[in-house]
Image (cartoon, rainbow, N blue to C red; front, side, top):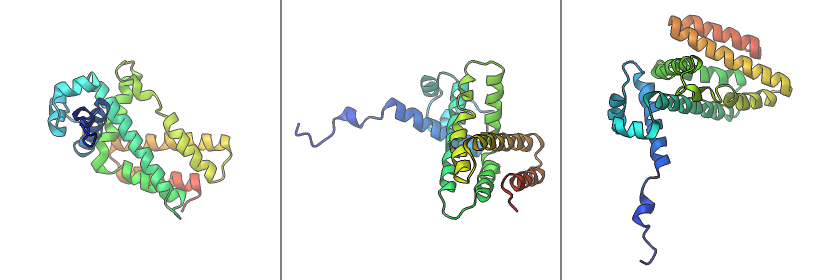
Length: 199
């Protein structure tokens, strides 16, 4: 061999790559179609994998759902970072844009799944427990950084970040439970007014 062609095994997908691709495809599917009647067979067919392959990579349906939640949360943090990096966009507008994304009816399945899996974990189901890792701490770093950038002290920044995260999650749960979009949006605007002095 002259070394100009990669060996066949070098072109093969790494197992971790395939697992990550399956998670990303599953997040997209859940965002578009929700979680009602979601089976591994149906999900696998929708994302180009067999249910056996999903079991191979994730162990169980619940472990796959945990990974979907974690990937969805990561995507939300990435969106927050992108919004924060837009020049001239005030923090209250960053929060509004993120809120619109989180409450978009097209991604409601992700939020519903988030609360469902957290409930399983809090009831002690071991397969769901990993969803609690980083549930708050993964968000605190970017939120605290945003607060410090806006002039808050480190202690105040941490307190404000946690308050903001809890408020958003509480209002998301309210929206899922009541369906009162206007009421929840109005409450979010009031929170932003109190939090940022935003009009």
